Length: 176
Image (cartoon, rainbow, N blue to C red; front, side, top):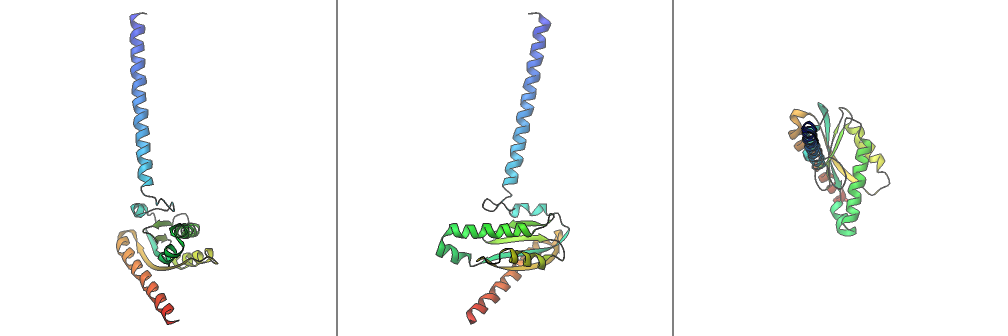
């Protein structure tokens, strides 16, 4: 083999080695990105979790804070698998009711947050109620009109409004 042919082989091998390193680096980057995205998703429901709050696209929106009623009772009486099914079914209803630019998050065991277009909060809640009609799933909610800059405060306020609704429902139940 001639000297120029041997040198050419070395350059080819070095080039292939560089390409291999680039492909490996690209693969690692893709894998890291996928893992980061997965860490922003709830494992049970597939909904976003709190880590995805920074991706809210609407500038102004109605923040709806939902909480399932009676999940602990379901878990205690029927088991956690039935409770999980209740959570999954509720999350499906939230997803079905959401428009393209609206986002749905699971923020706790039985707590969910939705960012709905301005003026759509009440309609959203009614739509979820219709989707769950005939099923033994009830919920409380609170709605706050807000913007991205005021998101954390709106989260606190909508959570407070949801608990007021829950408390009112309990006192109604206690009266009957």
